[in-house]
Image 1 (cartoon, rainbow over the protein chains, first blue to last red):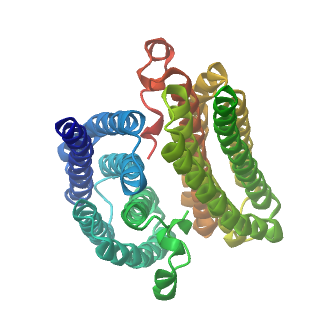
Image 2: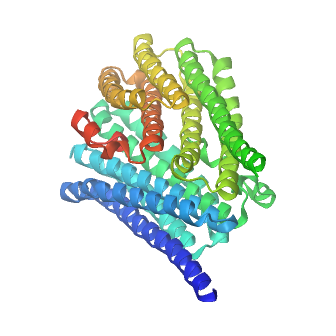
Length: 239
Length: 239
């Protein structure tokens, strides 16, 4: 009986580990899409932008695979407590990462549309924001794989900075548009690229919330210690 | 034994029904927020806009309740097949509806920011788009409660029309901005309001995908019959 129980437990662990591996693959894919979308925007590299757009199909397939695997674990293993939260967390994070891929694809499309006359210094502001968003995403994926809730809370808090950068870029772009109506098309493309980056920041915060919830079984936002530290009322407010 | 089994089954059914009731409450809330946000934008009604913003907390609480209830069902009832998909579907739809609430809140904030000098005819375009998005959302919630996959597929298909209206509004707003730089601030607010409506349309499509998946156990997008009918490659592309 003991060996059968061992076998069952080890099959279960292996299922959960497979889920983590798939999530790691999807995370790397989404991260690469964000990095390349920003690079494509900055360098006006249409070939790179197109390669980001092409990768979206793979992101969708990986999400579907993770969903199916998680559903199978739920049905066959009936996980409890942390394992249940980890399995549901996988579905959530896969959804967030797939949406991050969609948003990176959106930025790549803007990069292709952006005409060559757009002001380079404004593109740089968006690129700087992009680098910060990408760094946060990488840190969140790392925290997810290491199950590091302390790091997750810190990254979650730092989303505030991204929102501030976004608002500064927005103000700057509006001033540009008013000053030079010829720049409206290019500025609008940058405006949407910045908005997509800001949403990628929000989704990164969601990943941090999943890390926290999986470990503690309560929402990060409802944690009293976090409430005290908290500078922002709700991560999902920037709509 | 029979009466015990009956009791267990009826407790289970009651749990699943409670989940549907909570989803129906959250759906009505989100629907009302979208309707009132559009109304607030159209009538420059700041009090109505503020009431939309205030309702967001309730939407968040309802989502948390649905998540917790669904997790309890997964842990204690170990649902299989359709019931498993229905439970996971509840988590997904609650997430979509909460985000729809966030986006309605975003529109309400734009409504407050929008200065009174903005061109009324452009507001009307966004309002028309809003009415269509709201109608689609109502139809999707109705299809969800009636478990009507045929309606779900139709609503999912119609998201294409919303994307077209959005693109037309975008073009029109850009022309306005170029023609009259004084309109840039107001036009940008409308641009983001329209973008939020377009995203609400996408999330409505997601709800339709959940209805389909719960019933059939395959993704709507992977269904051969749907592929044949399909005019659009992917609902989630508009990023």
